[in-house]
Length: 300
Image 1: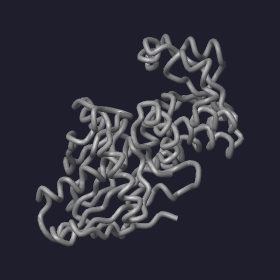
Image 2 (image 1 turned 135 degrees about the vertical axis):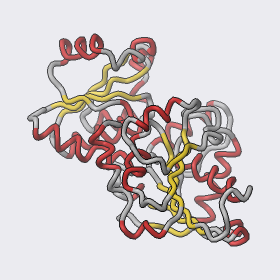
Image 3 (image 1 turned 120 degrees about the horizontal axis):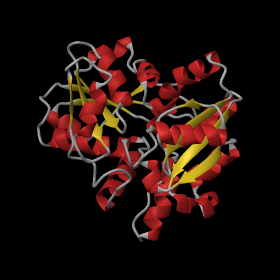
Image 4 (image 1 turned 90 degrees about the vertical axis):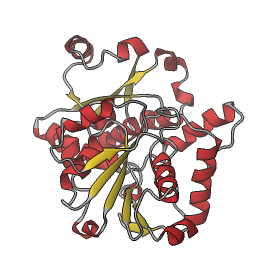
């Protein structure tokens, strides 16, 4: 069940700022957080159009791949994942995300990184249909109009009490839904996991409101990049407030929020709501990477 959990920390008391986190990670044990929201209306549309196969795209540790596989199993619909990295063909069974997706019935097509960059072209999609047959296609990360519609349901009427809504940003669908449903007096701040300003253009495809901004200083080097300070922060948050954070999205956002509070970015008495977008399944894969680099791992 989703609820807002108030964070109790000395910093918040000192700065007189209220911070709560919406536990979207608890919405479903397997289809976690924003992935549940993004898939909801896409699954309904696939059924309406009588598709028996979902096809989507992702990397080796993609939360979207994991969630789509489980959703397909629950809804008795076949799933295919087009996976970035042809070299994974020989080692995917050792990958926690892909091995679990396979157990849930997902079939994989591994492509080179060069070909993966062409995934949105008509030629690429036509070749897939000739090879696989007909399918309902969901974009990488799950972001499309129906995904945004699902993410518009994240905020409830009770959330109108908050001044600021903070959200991690990957492909932009989740924050777009939040922007569309936020109250007129609220400001939405996104924390991208990726470098660059291209996300603004992607988000603007789905929104008309101007009540938002992106804070691009907390990507830690880009998607799936972490360091010792981020790992330490995630472990301390779990120990001190009892909330597990993923290292790609929510962990970086929470690090950023607390750093901004420490720097007096927010006025005293500001009420902040941070959205936990799930993604905890990716910790196992990230820990394999951290171990390979002789770095501290994330507590599970």
